[in-house]
Length: 267
Image (cartoon, rainbow, N blue to C red; front, side, top):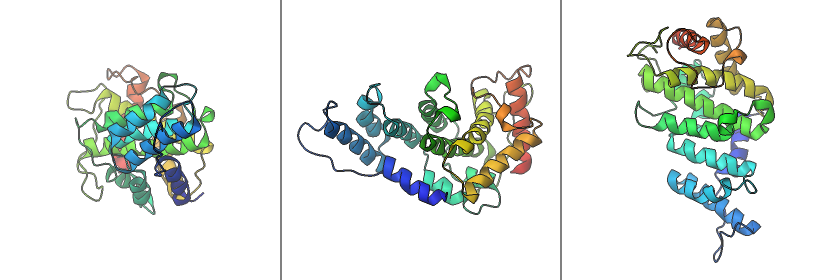
């Protein structure tokens, strides 16, 4: 499937601006009221008004009865919006990229301490049902499509925050996560999140709608990094981004340190 066609479909689902009716338009007991909530949230997302998108969709997201797949994607999009995430930017930079890590890094304009990576983590928690860590096989294909691109954004945000890339994504500084961790290294959660993102992307890809050459190239490059790190496969990586303690004794930190080295070599 051409990723551009899929992006059009997702844009219709999560970013279209619908007609907002007048009167008692937010009555959740009516289809019209629920659709008005969704339309308003999409309107705010299309304008980059992340907080207002949260406010619009929260009554539906907070209701088990009305928390549809569309509502979940909009809630995740509201967090991703605060994280500076733009799917079209990532897809555009990946198109025909000779080095996917450069494409990732130049796609996310974030900096350490600006809260954007944390917002992306919150978006991921929505897609995985938070602490239940819903696996790809148990998620719908649309959610897996979004999960893949959102995790690519997480990788890009981490590379941009720690790798000091130039405008074209060229690495300016090595990522550092020693085993055990030292004070100047990347944080435990970010190091673990880099490896988790790789595992989730590889896990999600077979259960997604994606089949285009660009997303396949990104997935294959990440798989190659896992092999270069001595892991055999990205599928063996823990899905818990809080599991790295940095002492050097836990397997998650050992894997993260090896993956960071592999990414440095590939970037």
